[in-house]
Amino acid sequence: DVVLYEDNTETRDNVFPRQLAVNDYMIQDPRYLQTYANFFCKFIDAYKEQGIPIDMIMYQNEAYSYTPYPGCAWTAEGTVRFNVEYLAPTLKKRHPEVALYLGTFNTNRYDYVDKILSDPRMPQSVQGVGFQWEGGQILPKIRAKYPQYKYMQTESECGGGTFDWRAGEHTFHLINHYLGNGCEEYTFWNNTLCDNGESPWGWKQNALIHVDSKSRTATLTPEYYAVRHYSQFVTPGSRVIAYKPSTEGRTPVLVVETPEKKKVVIAGNFNDEAKKVTVKLRDRYLNIELQPHSFNTFEEK
Image 1 (cartoon, helix red, strand yellow):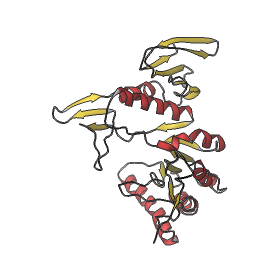
Image 2: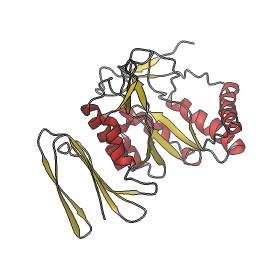
Image 3: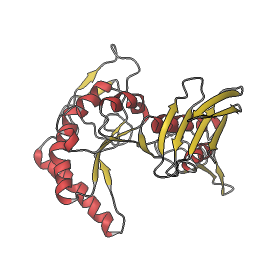
Image 4: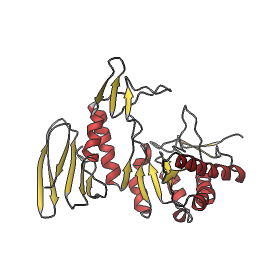
């Protein structure tokens, strides 16, 4: 089959991807689509036999990008067709305990994602939506229009093999953005990498732990500490009660309330100079000065 594309290069700026598939790479034959849905259930069964429970799936990672590694592009129509008419009913019949999320959306084409979620059958078929990379740019607008879904961040941005403080700041900003905009989970692509973090296809990436293969030593990277400020203090069952993005003065702030009703303030300063920040907590105020290029957590006692 010849695959055609919609090319918006001349009319759309800063939109990823500039080209979208007009034909689905997955052949839209009912026999293939049902077989693919059955495969998901076989996958769940196989893991269950090994004692590994699966409680949620998404139909594909990055279905709207074109990469040097194997991929499978889908149209909006194909996405709806497979998830609504095949995968959702097959899961409901064979694995009703497994939730179905749509994703992963790594495109900032709001019109494309909106077209998928606006199908009237979608709320009965999927429980949540996953965003990553450019998809994070449209997360606030999508969530405002579709508050009935659960949301999660599905892949932290990998970086460029620098393992430096700037990479840590970027991850700190991303966690602030996704949690602040309603995501209940934040996931990582790389936990540990060695040397320059180069992938098999030549992409140098970052990780939470950096290993020197010659000295056989491991180092906790700035990205690790960025994550720890959130993961150590934001306990299960906590809820976000206030959020300020890092675009406003490069000082991201997230305020959460723990199940014990304690307030936790997580704040970063990505500037070259100290910044004063005031946070109102009910009838109390937290007045703090954030040191340059710092991650900070304040827990109510």
